[in-house]
Length: 437
Image (cartoon, rainbow, N blue to C red; front, side):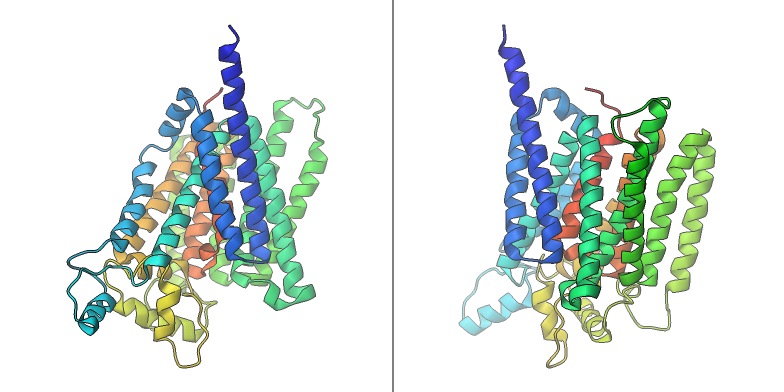
């Protein structure tokens, strides 16, 4: 007679454990942002897999059906890069990189080559990508319950703000070498958006209670969130380029439009008018910032923070990149070949350029289309959500920032920024659909 209750407790314990592991990954990512290390990234990958195992053990059929409904269509989009990376590491009769053909000629052998120029790096990149997908899935499963969603938003906001503050201290008070400008820019943007979402949550909680006193003082919560906003703005002013700042501005407008439309109760045509207006404004700014006089790829036009040497070398590499890419995770290994003697370029000046080099230009377009589709899904879910609209609204704004920054800097190549983005997007996907337990 007590087995069902015991089974329910076991499932709840598994999901709670997965949630705790997710928080540990976020804390580790925060530390990696200040002091990056391969060990921290490897540990995050292991914890992500373990958390997904706990989710698989603890999830009920209702949970699985709910997540399947939330991620409808997105699962196929997430699987395509996996297929491409697997193809890159398999021996192929045609389409192999010239490095393997030359090796066969030098060794006097006839064997199939690979698309990837470095199989080990591509395997590591595939592992990291699967870990990111695992973190998104874990976030979707564990934040279906509103209490965990609130705790995750609080953790993300607090840790992102503290990480931004730590990076600022490392930049100004200690040593510039302790703070990566691109990572600081990414965390500052996320801290700003997460603080806005926390402000909306505090106001929503106060209004829901009808002015009755609540356990957490709303005024203190608003003061703490305001501090997060200030830290995020300072971080952006200290690290972001004009292009990144414009992207963050549009992300804030996306978030604000959801909250405004929900509160004034406007019809759908009003939302369409606002979105079309912002799309036209964004297109005008892109045209304004695009310099047609430069013979540069659009993937590099907006990376104004990159050095001329890095942009020039990456442009040459992009010109030589085949349609299937040179292998996931290999851009840092190939780029030194194209730089001048004595150069010290460690990575392409933009994330999207790295994607085009490693996976090919068609996959870069696919990634852009997928993220744009994700933003649309989250935005629509936010408009339909009602009370908890700030979750998918913040995720939509965060995805827009990630898409914009992918053209402006290589911040998304850092594991710490990617982990925070995973948790935020998973939270938004889970809360875009009402699913009371």
